[in-house]
Length: 546
Image 1 (cartoon, one colour):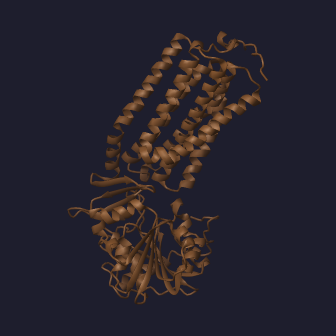
Image 2: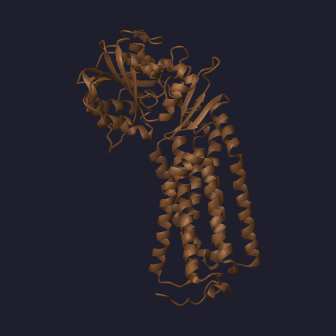
């Protein structure tokens, strides 16, 4: 139902009293407004997903980061909608201003967050709260601006042709939700893999400011004063200039930021379909460091101590002709230690990241560090998620299973430390089999470590705890340390498990490790036992405890 225009409120500008003076027919004008709604909704969702992804990559714990970003944004959208009521008498100018600011803030948000991460020493230490506050500030600002869009667009579409409120809301939200769908799909499948986060966010800001400026300066230009038109045009040109300059410098900025994070010895930096992989050193006698999504997964100075502690206690009771399953460990370093034992007949590796596997085979530094493990005919690789592979694979008993997986505190890995996962591992173990689990730092996060032990016990596996330090430097060995030393764990913990209720003995038989000794292993077991926390519930897929 079409309604006549309401009388102007006191103090409203004269242009409010009648229909918008459009250069096109009203039907075409409404269509163009809905197209702008579609584009703005797509851009808004890209900004949200970009903040969630960036926070997850740099801070970990994606559930927490997503919850913070999305809840702050939704709250801010409500406040922005209320605030936009003050602008509805100047809807066209207000919408143009909102889109210019939103394009600038949203487009530059990824670059600003990465700059803070790179040049303040990461997210630990004295700067721990500053970057998190910046993330919340961006979420709040973008949410306020996105929230202001809908009331202003509603006012504009009603200015074209007065319509009943239900019909106008239905049209507007239909375009908004379809745009959100397109933006939500474009981010992971187009922007992130082909442009990366920095350029993708800048391109989104460019589309945003062009769409908003075209609508206001093209369709509603007759409702603007000459001063307002030139002000909005100048603001749009400045925003486009900033975004374009940032896009032109994005490559140099990313290299400089990467050097600030990882040092100047970066040899490889690639984004695979799973994660960002960075390699430093590994040539000319320099130690090799492997970073996955900003976390030090392999430290060349201490990786041997870590991998020997993970592998050799589990191999101690292996029979001749042993079958070994390595879950994760695509870098090949755990496989290297397994292959040192000649009792091993077959090694099956399950790794999700094909890009990491390629580097482990072809990169001169990483392939030398893993002893060219993937060239050994005993090694067979399957590209798959570990949980999915165990569910689908036929039950072929393994004598040893090595779980060389990311830290249990990282949300993406939580399912790989669940009771359901360990139940599948138990099914894959031979009756005399052994499972070695890397379970995070013992001293700094004992509750997480002993939750892993409780989860193993709930799945029918009895575990023996122990830890490891680099015997030469005392520096903490193992994966998932932050890029700074402020958050480095004091040690790294493991659990050696076996089916049944009797914990397996901790010993070293067969191949003698280069860094471990029986005496050190016994002392490390006692040190881990002193941190024991009893009565913890197991972690499950529907009730994660980490």
